[in-house]
Amino acid sequence: MLFALPVFSVAGWGQLAPSPDAPPVSNAPAAPAEDESVATFKVSANLVDVIFNVKDKQGALVPHLTRNDCTVLEDKVPQTLKSFNVEFNLPLNIGILLDTSGSQTRVLPLEQEAAGEFLQEVLRQKDQAFALSVDVNVDILQDLTNSPRLLSRALNKAEINAPGSIGSGPVPTSQDPRGTVLYDAIYLASKEKMRDQTGRKALILLSDGQDEGSRHKITEAIAEAQKDNVMVYVILIADVEGFSGFYGSMGYTGFSAMQRVTQETGGRVINVGHNPKKLEQAFQQIQDELRTQYVATYSSTNTKLDGTFRHLTVECKGDGMKTQLRKGYYATMADNGAN
Image (cartoon, rainbow, N blue to C red; front, side, top):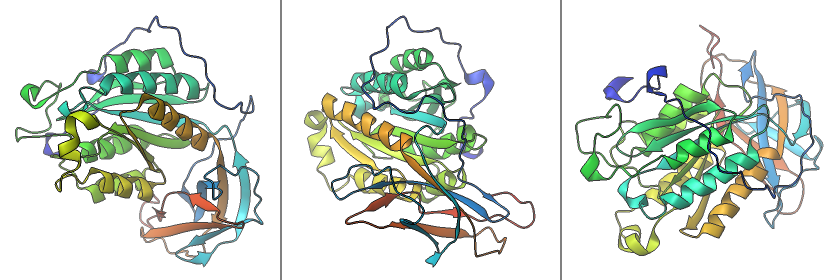
């Protein structure tokens, strides 16, 4: 990687022992026991798979639509669907990104506990997840695994890296003053950990949303996530009492930046403040959304293999129906066939 950014390598991954803590009982809605489908968002010979969910005007997920109820448009041009299915058990690849900068000191324990419980509930046999810490560096806490115990143990070992301890990570990102490199984390997690995975891919970032010192711009982070078919969720969590002056100041841009990242990649921002109950509910909402997906497939009417970005929209019949999906995809390039 350029700019001396940390590279995710085997040498940087520690072997972590299972946690002895008993997992919490899941209250998530039951899903079909077996589902052999593996859906991906891809372009192959102009074949496009679009994964999305639909909510009614009350915000409840709508799982019973048919292909006659929804229209997929690419650059505002309606497409003819080859297939349309509702999926409740798509294989998942999940990345948990913990903000471990000084501003998260009081809420980090809440994040660790809630994230561990979420992974215990959401991971099934074909799923996998990894965990990163994000401050002045982007460090691997746990590589891809199907073990919630390993992930929980790794999350619980995360520590705050405040300005006074800059450089404590294994590979510093820079000698310049750094803050919280959120854009770098999204870029690296998408490129280094998600690019070669199949199935549904989602990053869940727990942070106050304020990037400081990233080498990659927000546009680069979004583009990389889109190219690697990764959706980004942000759970906006902050010690409101301790940092109310900062978050209410003109210098705070975290909320709007995170809104942009999530909307462009198909996720969303959930603001929980520092409320443990809201944090738990946020993870439950994300789990429900990841498990209730429509998959629509079509051959693009635009047959040019030019690598350009194609905008996607999905319109579904019904009063107040809203769809949630990434804003588009990058077409195949003619020279190498890569997306």
